[in-house]
Length: 270
Image (cartoon, rainbow, N blue to C red):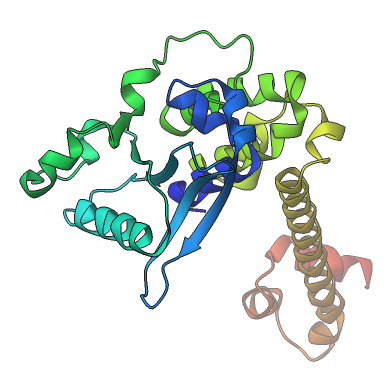
């Protein structure tokens, strides 16, 4: 799962994390419905929109931009204004979440007047979180910290989630798996080993990991069994080959087993 899609999943499952990130009370989330919206008669789609239940509150257009795109602002503002043309919202705000400043596009002079208004906000996660931050009482905003910091820090937060807010553990595990996508399933489990197994298996992502381990163990066992079976077939063939007059050296080369084993089998059958 790409990081931006992971963030939209986070917004869907824990919308209070977004409002906490932008400095508002997490309770504000109850006043909004999170959704993805299609812009009619275009091929454009906005993946993260917090639509207010009351028209007096602003609508939020949110983008998680974790890779550099020099045409990002052109697309982002085009989507917003096309949506506003088709929908009667008077108050709006665009918010972009970057992991670091160097991910933002370099040239944006054409959009500077918009970027400097109260209608727009850029959030750089590197300015909010530090690797040295202590993780004590879990806050949904910590999920963003998991995304940008070390594997060890992410695992530490995941352990806190499992103890304090297990209902959010599925999100934490998905973030861990996304960070460790180049690791083996056993290595991923090493990061999750301190999480209670029953709690882990009570999440969708946790069950998927456990199932992957089970299937791998079964596959490894089947492979080992096949290898053992093949070796036995080779050993069973040795007496017949000896009776046909082949030397131990010839049999060893043909069956790819050691001469000592051929001789051992020969002595048992003599």
